[in-house]
Image (cartoon, rainbow, N blue to C red):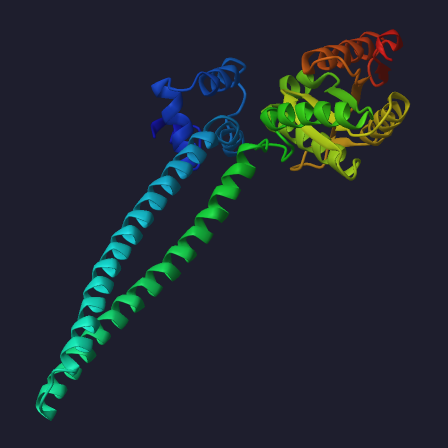
Length: 329
């Protein structure tokens, strides 16, 4: 708590969790990120701490939500099974009562005898109806709870596949999408294209203007990539300042066109100091493009797109380069 107050941070639960993880040394990436800022004598802000929380600690929260949902499901099933067992017992008892009524009604000799039999049957019927009512109530409660848990788990699933800072698909989601794209491409015989995108001179934004400006750049690029794609195209944050884009049923030339379109759009974006309105710089990106070769692995196509990206940066940045055509079919 002392560190939170000394840096002028808000003592919110996420920020408290970040600093607890830092001092307890329970998460390497949290420690490394904070140490990096402290070593550079940069400002520690609420936004920075929230980014750390979303990047590295929210998954633990999701895991806890899943565990909690599992516990609730088990408890609900346990209560429901118990109630069903009670209904089974009551039903068996009620059936026995009806058998007795059927047998005794023929033996009754007086109106009083018949009245006793009817009263007993009526009492048992009321008890059976009450058991059914409880069962219906439990079913309704269970349905509402399961619907709520389904929504919670869908939220957890979506969060687990989304990068907390940019809102794009995260690396885990990208890996899955790329594998799916390879399988679909092999099945239908149509190629797809992979774009690896890197923000030029990103380190200078962080070093010169601080982590918050770096995050602003990442979010701006991510939003531009997302807005510039369509349909089944997938944009993901691959790691750090690098992004990846999957273009289904797209050949190399079309992939190059998309990359250049995105590059030109981003090159018009200025990074602005939100407090002063000062223009801090203009963003550019370099892009490597590779068309899928039908016998290659995920590692192969990523390596070829990465090599093309390296070529774009080596040749002066702010440009798009294609993976060598000799590797293509």
